[in-house]
Structures are given as structure tokens and as C-alpha cells.
Image (cartoon, rainbow, N blue to C red; front, top):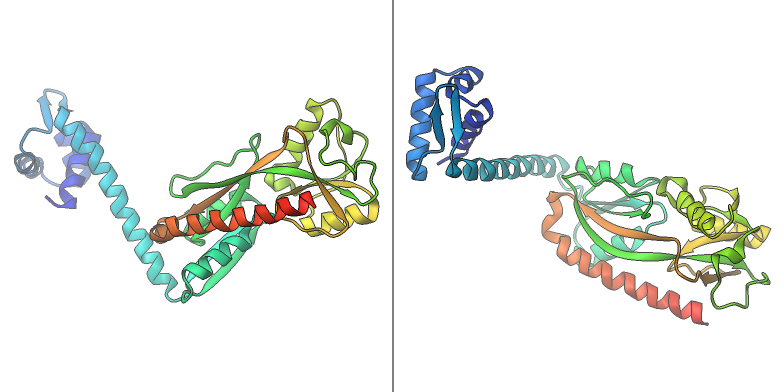
Length: 302
């Protein structure tokens, strides 16, 4: 049995008859019939039941077709990823993420795990753009974030593994009326001026929905900023802002919101060219992330 024989079986199954398959393959019907018989003999039983209007798969035939499709898809993927590695040459491993994700942790973990391999890093504003780059082989490993009410669509060609679910903390300036509280209710922030996260992540929509669920519409004044810019706006204007774990922001006090009404998922994605490294990278990423969270929790408690 060779791969070409699996292509023959699939062609007959898809056509529903040997004559139609022979026509599509541009070979003689007698020659195709002989090939099918040799394939059936090598597999130990009939794959097709012959009928007046064509052929029908036997139980063995259905099994072979199902497994053949999987094998051929994997073989095609092997060819594609091999060609991409050859084209890439010595460019090393290409990492990526969305703005606001802990991409720097991924870079550090991969550098420690594969110290001799050159790295490049590419950050996109939206998760869909990152997933497209991973699925086409332009990125090897990346981190994306998604909110429950704004889920991403992960392409079939992309491997997916969860890293963490992060709660949103509200950042208030020193001296704010809630600055002495260890945690706050979202409803207590009605009337505040908000700095809102980049819209491409779905953060603004999820924040607005959470606020409306407790009875108010947030007064959004500053849009699409990164954490450093958001912290500066909080300090300079007295606004409040949503931040996620791990930020050390002088002059901004981070407060957990009771009930964690806004949270996001961090997900590691990859393509098959680096599949052999995924287990190690994922384990290292979890260690680095939890180390960062423990540091952030100590800052909150201080």
C-alpha cells in the first residue's frame, strides 16, 4: 500500500462510481477497476459494494476512507511545514502576540528553552491577525487574549492550549475616594471617567456589558491605550482604568472588583512546525506566569 492507493480509494468514494472516478482521473475504467481489486486484496476485504448505479462503501471501506483522509491531510501538512522550514532557513523561531498579552514572558521562556535559536517577535493589535499569521506559518508561537463575550475563532491548522484566565483590576489614582479599599464593587464606579482598553480585544464591549448589568453605562473618555498610557491618564486626569495582573504602576492603586465581572483568557497558539517544543514552552510559560502573578499579588497586598 502506498499513498497513491489511498488517493484512488478516496476518488472512487467521492465519485460514487468507478466509471465516474475513472473519468475524473482521466484513466481507463478497466485499469481503475483492477487497481481497486488489488487494493482490496491487500487490505483483506472489499471496500465497495457494486450496484447498478455505482458503488457503496462497506464497513471496511468507511473505515479506510476515514483513516485515509486523516493520513493524507497529515502528509500534506508535513510537506507544507517542511517547505516552510526550508524557505525560512536560519531565521530561527518567530514569536508573536497581541498588544497587552504577556508576550514578553513567551519570549523569555523560549529563549531559555532554546538558547541557540535566533528569535524574532511580532506584536499585533488584534487576535484575529495573530491567528492568521500563525495559520499561514508566518509566526510559529504566539499568545492571544479573548473575552468570554467576544470569543476568537481558532483556525483548524492552529494548535491551541490555555495558559490562564485573568481578572480585570480597576486602577485608581492615589487619593481617590476608593483608594483605601482593598476591593470594590463595579457599581461604585458609576459616574467615573474611564480609560478603556484596545477595542480589538473586545475589552471595551465586555466592560460596558458588565457595567450595564449592575445599572450604569461607563463614561468612556480615553480609548485604545496600552497599560503604560492608561496609567499616565489615571495619574494625570483622575480617571479610572481596567488593568490585568502583573503590572507595577507607580501612582496607580490596583483594586480587585468583587465578583470578577470582567476577565479574559490567555491562550498559547502554534503551528505544526514547532509542535515538538510546545509541551516544554507551555510548562515554562505556566511557571513564569504564576511567578509573575505571585509578585503582583504581593504588590496588591502591600
